[in-house]
Amino acid sequence: WAGFTLARRLSKSLFDVRVISPANHFLFTPLLPSTAVGTLEFRAIQEPVRTIRGLGHYYQAKASHLDLDKRVVSCEDLYKGTKFDVAYDYLCVAAGKKSNTFGTPNIERLEGVVVFFLKHLYHARQIRNRIVECFERATNPTIPAVQRDRLLSFIVVGGGPTSCEF
Image 1: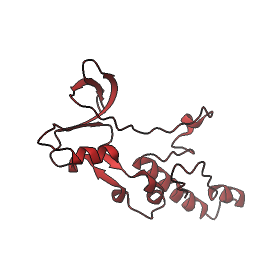
Image 2: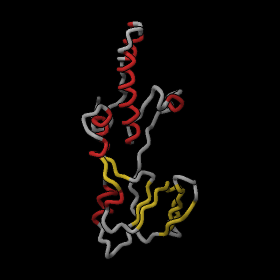
Image 3: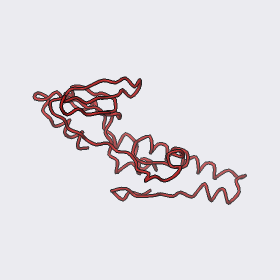
Image 4: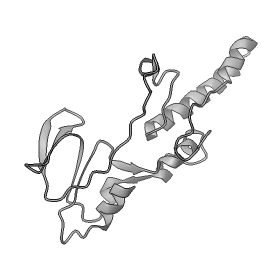
């Protein structure tokens, strides 16, 4: 939220404020577990980038390189992969987030299938959908008890910095 707050609070009469981000919204991640289990709706924990009054430009892209001498951020468009540069006078880097798997085998291959991270809204949606699917499948009268127990068993690894567990 630091990047969002800075972009909102900077004087637009003094600065041409530009935001480069692959996500078109800012997310309050400590509440993601609540969206995954349905306690909160997804829209309650996000704020669209375009709600920043007086925002000069928003680029839905990934920043791939920073040239400090030329004062240029190299970017890649999220949809077509087109590369472009954004010049700046002042730069604020609000670091993003990526899950660290610590080299655990098969995690990346199984992501979204039986392994779910919780860093983005689409992660919370995946978890919610998977939980509902498991509940529905477990109600099938033809499912053996062993499989039903497996469908109704969930493992949470790590609680994150806010100790959120669900």
